[in-house]
Image (cartoon, rainbow, N blue to C red; front, side, top):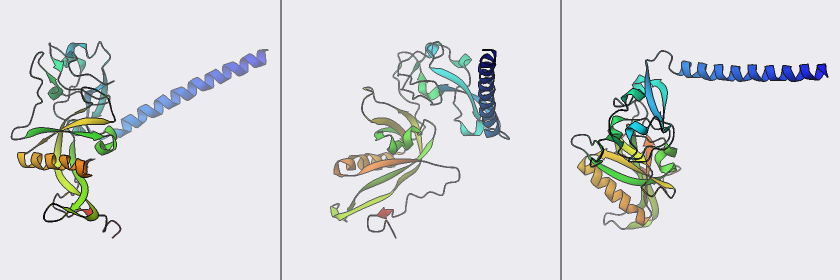
Length: 241
């Protein structure tokens, strides 16, 4: 009986040591990830935050958690601590779980709830599925490239046989907001982008092309990405060239 008890106690000790080792490794990985880079405190949505939620209830409602990230990777208006969540403001647009809490997503109670649109730009919203918005990694503050795919058209705008084409439509487009629609149902989510008038016109026309078999894809832009919106793209005839 004593030998069995010793075996059980030894197993428990080994399990505790193993768990401690895992926690130490995870913490070490986080430290290594920001080693050599200035870190900053940030607030992240611990779960989805509905539009209209009072800012003062974000902490008490368990909506936010503290984290640390490399300072050069976060938007300048990111909220850094719960002490900044004061006043009678509300969340202006739905915030996804894991999304950074930004001041541009918060507004005055009873206000119009409009987004903070950069000067000289307009805000346009499109509905995209998970794959089309990079599996949900498209978040406010990120820059994206917009791809369009659809039937190949001739000079008169008519379908050019059965050929399809995919090409870059826009580059360096800022994401203002990302989240589910007000109904919160279906596989698609809404992404709001900031762009010039001409860019918005292109996006609206490309979105309307979805009824003709076309559609949009977003891609996250990496540092020093060599992007161009003037290429001819790829067709179903040149796909394997």
